[in-house]
Structure formats: C-alpha cells, structure tokens
Image (cartoon, rainbow, N blue to C red; front, side, top):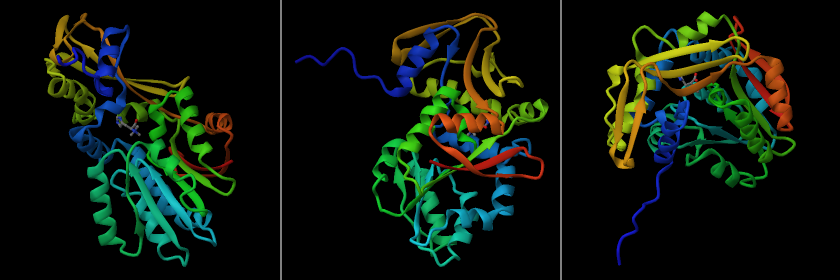
Length: 320
Ligand code: AVJ
C-alpha cells in the first residue's frame, strides 16, 4: 500500500501555515519556546530592564509570611504551579512553607521535561524537606487530573504574568478552566503586570543588547531549523509598541525588504512586502479594575492584593 500523501501537521506547522498565509501575518508567541527560546527567556528575566521578575521577587519576599498564611490549611494542601520554569521565585515560598508544621505537596506542571528535571534536582538539594511531584504536560490536562487528586485544599500558582500573552477573551477561557477545577476552599495565586509609564514598559521589551530581539527572532530560526525555511534574520527588525489605552504591548518582526521565503517542509512560498510585519506577541498590562472584570467572568473574585513599593506589578489571590 502506498503511504498517505499528507502527514498530520504538528501544532507549530499548522500555526505557521495559517499565520503566514493570512493578512496581517501572525505567529503565536508560545512557539518561541524551544530549548534556545527557553534560554533566551532566562536571559531576559536576568536583564535589569525586565522589571517584572525583580518586582515579583520583591513581592514574594516582602509578603512571604502573609502569603504563606493565606495558603496554609490545617489539613494540609496541594500547591500546584502552572508553568513552573526554574522555580526561583517559588522557592521563596517553599522555604517558608517547609518551616511550618503543615503538610503540603508541591506539584509543578510544565511542558518542558527538561525544566522539571532541573527543578526537581535543585529543590531536593536546597529544600530536601519539600515533597515534590513533577508533572510534565499541558496545564489543563494535568490540572484536570488534580481535580480529585486528594481532598485537601488546592493552591494554584501562576507566576510571571504569563497570562499577559493572552488576549482578554483567551484569558477569560484560561481563568474559567482554572476556576472549574477549583472547590470552595481552593485558592488561585496569580501575577499580573500593571499599567505604568509607557517608557518603562517599552524598555523592558526592547533591550539595548538585543536579547529580546533574539528571543523574538527565535521564531524565524525555529522555522529555518524545523520547517526548512530560509529566513535571513538580518532582514527583519524587532519592533515593540505599547498602547496605554488598552494596556497592550505588542511585538512585531518587520521585513526590511521585499522578499520571498520558502518553507520546504510545508511546501510553502510566502511573500513579504517591504515593511510588512509578522505579529509575534502581546504582553498585556492590567489594573485592578480589569483584573476584577476578567476574574468575575470566570466566577472568581479577588481576595488579597500584594504589590511592590512602586506598584509596578501585583499578585492577587482569588477564590470562587
Ligand atoms: C513570559 C509572557 C511573561 O510577556 O513579559 C518577555 C514573555 N516576551 N520578553 C512577557 C516575554 C518578551 C513574558 N511572559
């Protein structure tokens, strides 16, 4: 028998095929994160301009006792983290929590097996008392498994303003899925980057050393590597905008020249006009009103708000 003519496309292949043949062109930011994308994001988090990381760090450090008291439950609890990454910020909380008499299990979920293995090793070394059970997979598949994992209180953690990559309608879906997995006593603890001086926001996504540019252009590199494309990275400009009215920062790759790209794996030719853009990312900024509105749409309400000295960033706790 003859092999089928068309093989099933991967999620990345589908996204590229759709995103580069529509107008305006667009590829979703989640596809930036291959191994190199993960490394570049680590570098971004270490940049002085990328204030989000330091602010959240400050908030967790300054309010550690109070946050841990909110998490605590006399019957113990399960601490579920969506998109745990390297766990550097979570460790502040884990350290304190492991000094309390309470019994808890730390369940970090991440798509990257690699990140989870490293996280587990470092937790076992630095905080040997913490019971850690890593879960590789997509947030919601795993979250669903935890719905009746134990009958203890669930504390769900989403740090880093990761929700900012979603448009409001998608953010509501995201919150609804989390909300659906929560019982009355469960808690959601989530970071939201705040509206602020537009210049500070632009600088965070437009660093002078070109790390964010390399991060954004990693999409082109990934297409070259995985889809046998022939993008010349030097013919694209990283361009960042921030709209203070909507609170949306946007990343683009702008073609400096008129060009035709070939993506051999997809048997696709794509034409880019001079100055045509590919939209790659949104990084939404919030205020309390918007957060309250989004949460309300998901049947959640704000319980506590923690912020840094300059009110650049906030962590909220939500309940059903
Ligand atoms: C991981 C979504 C929080 O949008 O701030 C950093 C990703 N992009 N610099 C953000 C990112 C460019 C980041 N999040």
